[in-house]
Length: 545
Image 1 (tube, rainbow, N blue to C red):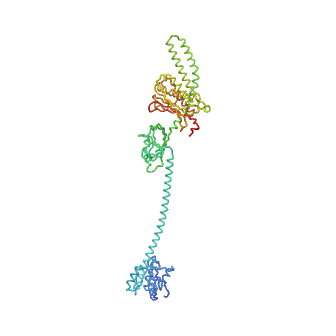
Image 2: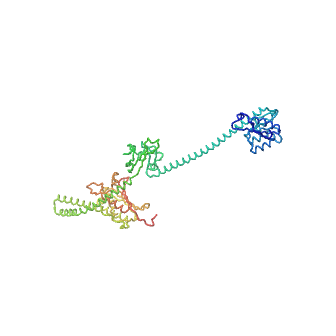
Image 3: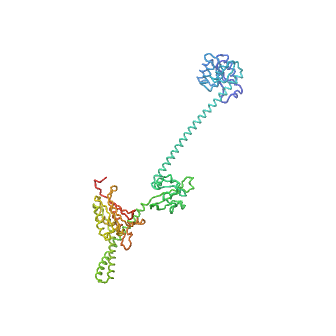
């Protein structure tokens, strides 16, 4: 039984006296007395302990620091040379806090026991002389305490690892959620950008025609904040209508792709509205009959189509006019000639004179109509045949011709002209332009029935690089319902007995287009109508901006 430690004696049932985590309990016993060391070793060996011995504190610290000892309990004598037991156990507590500490003391060393508790954290004491059963019970209690702490640390380590894994998983999930959220936000932003980049108004409405979503074009058309549009009915927002639009497929319960045309009563603009059912709508909205509505402003398209139709009609009329004029000119010339001969032959018969006068006037009227047809059918001069034209001289010549008309000479009609001497020149045909302005002046005089004021204002418009001429009268103006027809061929507001052919303004519009300009008409607030003609100008170099 010599040596510093003995293997545990295989006592039957000894294993059951220790915690499962401690397969072979081990103790480091420190005492400077060899006899005491051997006594403790033999006592604990019988109870299944592995006992390591050290003769002083320094020897014990060296063995612990070597890492070769796997002990659960350190038992030290109080009084030892070099370093006492309290100081030694305090160092053990500091370096190996899980190791359980016991102190051997005398029964009258109360003050040292208090010091051991405070400095070394020792809570188990065995007083000399000790009973073997007491020693075994105290050491076993230390082993159990070590096992509890070891299990706690093991569970803590497992918990820490689980927490680390859970934290890592949480961070990974958070990253995935953030990435998915960013993807969704980006997809939503891209969808909104795509939705808003469509120039035409676009809405998503439910079965009750309430707008669920709208692009910025809807807000621009409605001239309202987009936030005030959602939830309101589409016909109220876009067209100012209290009731659904005529023929609205959604109001009639249609579920397929449908398209209708309608007119905005507020401004006369025409729209093509196309609807599609939204099959992949949100499940919460599926019962609401969601649909996509596309609104296309086709006003200019319709106007262009009407212009093409009008041009085709004018071409056909021009061809017909040429044929009619050719066929009618000779008979009309004969009628006029024979009527004049008959007037010389009737003598004093007043009835025949009246009849022949009526025939001659009717023939002359027909000749005038045929001449208008020929003027309308005659091709406009080619642009390469145009010359530089002084608009001021053209207007002056037109005014001289207008002033010799009978209703002007009677003195009931006044002229108010403003034609600057520095008007820019234009490229064009002088005779054609003279016909344009003379036609407008004659129309204004006839509209006033010979009484009123005819105004002619001419100016250079630098911003548009045009010469602008405005011919205004104080007559009744043009009815709003007829404003869009006034330049159509054969349209006239004159009574049949006034001799109007309806070709004057059509010829004017044709010549203005041939010269690259534009013509418009508006009613004046003070009464009367104003025709505005704009022709591209030759701007002198010194006046270039």
